[in-house]
Amino acid sequence: MAISLAKKYQGKLEIMPKIPIRSYEDFALIYTPGVAELVKEIQKDENQSFELTSRWNTIAILTDGSRVLGLGNVGPIASLPVMEGKALLFKFLGGVDAFPLPIKVSDKEEFKQVAKAIEPAFGGINLEDIESPKCFFILEELQKTLNIPVWHDDQQGTAGAVLAGLINAIKLTGKDKNSKIVLMGAGAANIATARLLIKYGFNPKNMILIDKEGPLYAERGDVDSLMFKHPWKYELAIQTNGERIKTIEEAFKGADILIAASSPEVRIDKKLIRMMNKPIVFALANPIPEIYPNEAKEAGAVIVATGRSDFPNQVNNSLIFPAVFRGVLDSRAKKITDEMIIAAAEELAKYAEEKGLREDYIIPRMDEIEVYYRMAAAVATKAVELGYARLKLSYREFLESAKERILRARRLSL
Image (cartoon, helix red, strand yellow):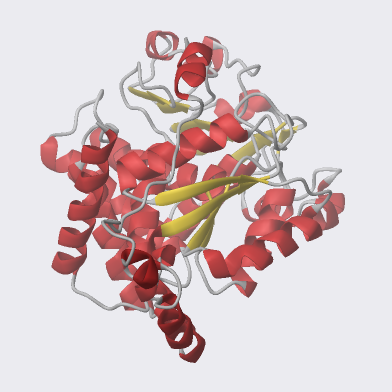
C-alpha cells in the first residue's frame, strides 16, 4: 500500500509559490530588478533574511542515513522516503516548511561542514537518523557554532515526549522524582532522556541504564574506554546507578519505572515486570515494542505506553518536534535548549491533565491539534525569557501566530 501510494503521487512534497503571478510585470518585482532591493537590505543586516525571505519558516532535515527507523544504516538515498515523511509531518502538525536533505558524507567532520555551509538558507536544522555516538558529537558541535537552532529529534524529541508522559504517569501512580528508573537501551533516545530527566530533577542515583553489556556503573570494566569513545555514555555511567547494580534482574527488582528505547529485537520478559513495584512501563521500540501492553499489564504494570498509535498512550517524538520548531521559528530563536524542551513537555502534560488523566490517557494524541500551538507558544516564550529570541512577543501573540500558521497548513493539506 505504501509503495502504491508513493508511485501514485511520486513523492510526498512539492514547492508552490506564495506570491501570485498575474502579469508579466510581476516578474520585475519577484525577481530582477526588484529583488536587488532585498539583497541590499539583507547585506546591511543579515537578520533581515528572516523578514524578507522564506528563511523564517524553513528548516533542513539533515541525515546521512546511518540509522534509519529500525532498518539501520541504509544510506542517504534510501533514507529519502523517511525524510519526506518527516517533512510532511512538520508541515501538517507545525506549519513548518522542511526540506529533506540526505547527504553523502564520510564522517562526522564532513557532516558538520555541510551543516555549516547550508546555514544561510535555513532558519533551523533538524538532525535525523544518525548513528550513535556520532549524533551526539554533531549536535553539540553545531549547537556551539551555528547561529540558528539545531536539534536532533531522535534525542531531544523522544526525551521531551517521555518527560511529558512521565510527568502525568507519576501523578496518577503517586510516584516521584526519587523513583527507581530502569532505562533499557543506552542509545541516542535513552541517553538524551536520562539527561533531560536529570535536568528536570529526577535523582540520577536511582536511574540505571542498561546497554548490551548490562547495567552501566562507574566501575564497570569498559567504562574508562567510554571516556574517549562515548563521553556521553561515560558521563551517565559516573552519574547514575548509585547502588552499583550489576545485573539486569537486580536492576528491575523493586523498580518503579521502565523506559525501554532499544530495538524491536529486544524482548522484555514478563517475569522482569513482575519484579517491579506496580510499575510505569514505557516500551518505545517501533514497530514492535519490547513488551506488548497486554503482557505488561498481566505482569502488574499500572500504566503502559508505547511508540505506536494503535495502542493507548503513544509516546512519540511527533508530539514534540513540530511544536518546538514552530516556537523557535516564530521567535526567530538562535538556539534550542533543554529549558525550551522542558517547557514544551510541561505544556504537553498540562494539556492532557486539563482533559482528565487516566491510565490509558497520560499524554495527548497527535490529532489533538490545539496542543501544538500551545507548546509552540510556550517554547517561543521561553526563548524570549532566555535571551535567544530575535522577535520578542507575548505568549498570547505567539499562541495566535502559531495557531494561524498550523491551521493554515492543515487546510492546505486536506
